[in-house]
Length: 88
Image 1 (cartoon, one colour):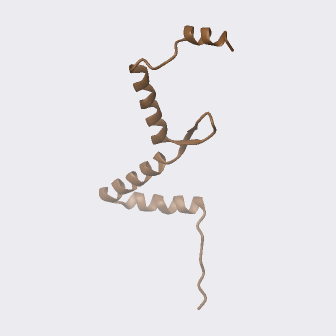
Image 2 (image 1 turned 30 degrees about the horizontal axis):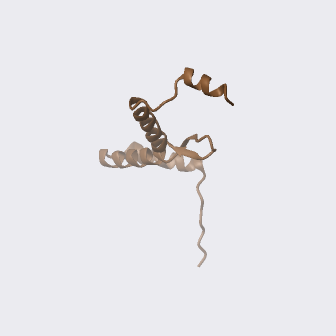
Image 3 (image 1 turned 90 degrees about the vertical axis):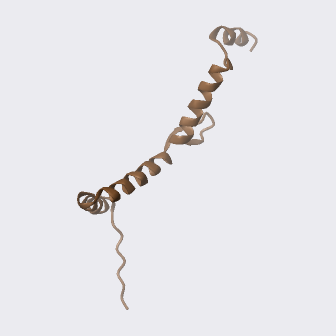
């Protein structure tokens, strides 16, 4: 049996998905939206100082952690940093 496998390119996939979206009911649209949002949460949006990738959710968590540290007073002022750098 001769079976042809066809791999769609990005443009053809986009056209196919647009056809699905244009005829979709609200339930399918909500599912597609959830899939896209989940996919975007896993995209790399930044890198650490060491060069490690950060996803959107990891980046958000780092920001929340930093804000908590500031609220607890766990930070170095410009003045303290200047004093410290004199000893380098």
